[in-house]
Image (cartoon, rainbow, N blue to C red; front, side, top):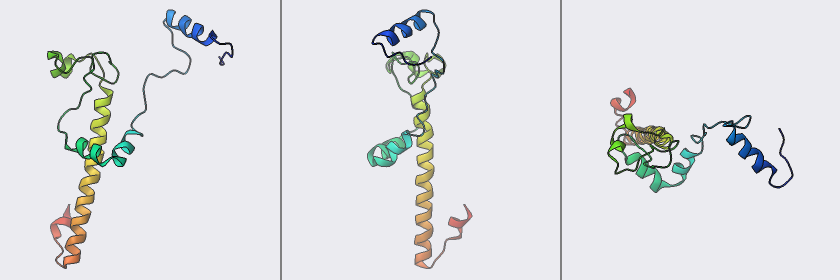
Length: 131
């Protein structure tokens, strides 16, 4: 199935597939955003700080998006209970993974700096090396 060069033919073909409730060959509804998201937070210190400072579960409260969001507005009572969500909340899940990775990197950098400071002072702290 190649691309038809006639204007309008691809749109007609897609409408036909949609009407038949079929998807084009090779279509995958699963996005692959996890590779790009960390770069955004590495390049924007304010966004990184804001994300790492969050606690608990993150959710995209969008009543219209059941893939990236939870399918409810933030003020809807159902938005408070993940068991009642209509959506997959992929954005929230990805952000929580990125937050975890960024937190690990931050703690590792802080620990490394503490070890170097300890060594520079000549009073190596054995506890820093134990963890």
